[in-house]
Image 1 (cartoon, rainbow, N blue to C red):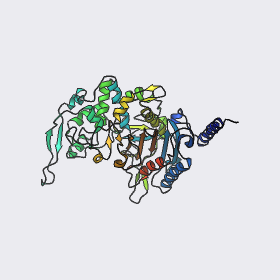
Image 2: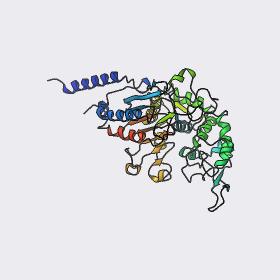
Image 3: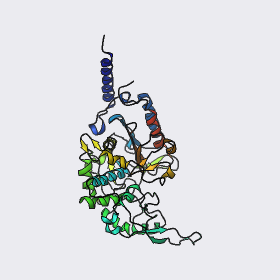
Image 4: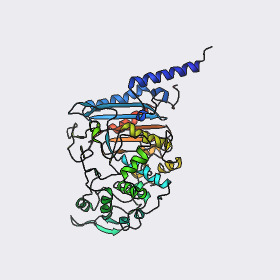
Amino acid sequence: MPDRSATRSRGIRAAALAWALACGVRGVGGQTPAAAPESLGLSSQRLERLDRAVEEYVARKRIAGVVVFVARDGTTAHFRSFGRLDVERGVPMPRDAIFRVASMSKAVTSVGALMLMEEGRLLLEDPVARFLPSFAHTTVALPPPEGSAPGTPPRIVPARRAITIQDLLTHTSGISYGDGPARAQYQAAGIDSWYLADKNETIGQLVDRLAALPFDAQPGEKWIYGFSDDVLGRVIEVASGMSLDEFFRRRIFEPLHMPDTSFFLPPDKRARLATVYSATASGGIARAPEPGKGQGDYVNGPRKCFSGGAGLLSTAADYARFLQMLANGGELEGVRLLSPKTVELATANHVGSLFREGHMGFGLGFEITEDVGRGMELSSPGAYGWGSAYYATYWVDPHERLVAILLAQLVPPGNIDLKEKFRNLVYQALVGPPGPAR
């Protein structure tokens, strides 16, 4: 009798090859294998729902262009581009488009700091002042007493304890983006936005100036989103003896084969940089202004300020390799950046109920799903991820062995809800465990 399992296995491999060739999928960064969704426990028919949803938003001019990426068990299952890289010039969105990934930079900065922790160069409990003396005596701005006259300045008090490396990683340092009680002082200091690509100064100079400003909360008492990762990036520079740009390139991007990830763009890659659009009041989009947070200074700017919080450019394929390293417990294709125990530490909740009123946890740079019901979204316990001001999102689901990324360039995004639908549409396509089709 014929060996039915062998015949079936050959059929699965043939179908996977045909699918990959038809879709032009070469895998993560052109090196990781691709396969038919069914061989990975996903439904091609259900993934078409994802494609149709993105195409609808593009057709309705709610977003200019999008790249989506889904991998399972380290194998690319779905990698598509939609819409336009540049609407006015009619340039289609390529899968290797380069995006400003803003706060998706934070995960890279977290990994860099954890690598130095593993090398014995820093401890999570170390005070930031061990590396940056300007943080030896920080202060906190308290709102004026209730009933104070308009324009009453905030009260400035000393911090009750030193800010630590862990505080930076968990966003419990009290450092905001300058939108708290001392907003006027941040504006006067020129440090009132996450966008630093236009700064004609080093991150060290900016961070030292930041240290003299009052922060928004006492260390460890609140989850506050802000410049913590920019400070952490400067700590990496001091602890490693390299600029953040050099450290990321030599220690992370080159080992992981991420050729299109950097702080600033080489001129020969300019044609692949996606254009930024903004939502309009009428529900459409318009080309964002230049310069500024719109098209920005990533090509012709000063190229001096390396923002660990929001400064990187990347592609879906490059960033997928970075996430797959984390999904693998710190290793990719024989290159190990972190130990599995360090990844476990980074993706545990470190802030109790301080983040999102306890609906989600927060680790060393990542939002963490602890309980699917409390998180109120499709997920698995232990899944982690984050996003970007430019309307991008990513997550890793260790239980489902899943990596998912959506990249776009839309700021501000208005009331578009594509990111939320993307998550639902990825999870609804999971119909079985990874492995041979069933």
